[in-house]
Length: 274
Image 1 (spheres, helix red, strand yellow):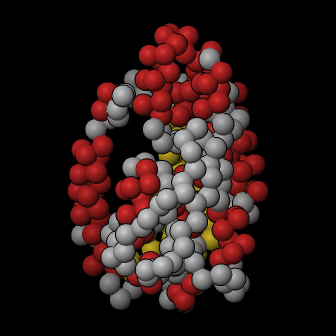
Image 2 (tube, rainbow, N blue to C red):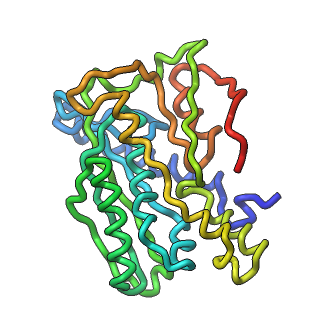
Image 3 (cartoon, helix red, strand yellow):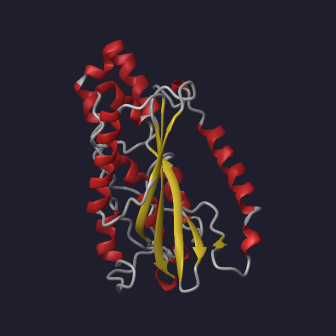
């Protein structure tokens, strides 16, 4: 079986680096103690929260990773903006927050007007569908620093203090509901590309499977807000926890949601692999 390590990705090293980065981030928290924007410590959470008095500001970052390599190989850029948006807003919704804006940074080796037009058109379309504004961003031409485009985003959301999803309330007997996603979202694509190359050789990008892997991610943010309520709306159902299954899979991400409660989970009826 081909593994992440075979594709050049060291998951353990990545996890260690994330812990190191968060450790440094925490050293900044005391600088805003007692001030507007004081951070709420939530190690292992899907997004960071800042205390704005009557509500929390929720912020997080992510990117499309090497899924962009497939888009470049196929020269199809109109859907990957939806992938970018899914990565950030579906992390933010795990707190119960409604995302109101997203900014983005795009690093390119050279400016390709058609590609940039398609990327931003796709992102704008996805944002409009989710009622999210795109106030600005950055396009950096950095020849020598990158070969394929690197696209990342930051989302900003808001949630009332009494509407934050409290995962510590998860108890024995609670029901776990899985929402089906048709593709790999924007994770695992270094491994996926290796498998495609091993199977199809240098013409891997001409395979139907390669095109299938570029299928845009399902965005759950809007659908979940219909249950959780947008900012200022009542909650329709008491949701005790949400896990966004991205890098690390079910094990690593669901563990983050269950950590505070001390509960485990029995997952006996998962969707079949596809």
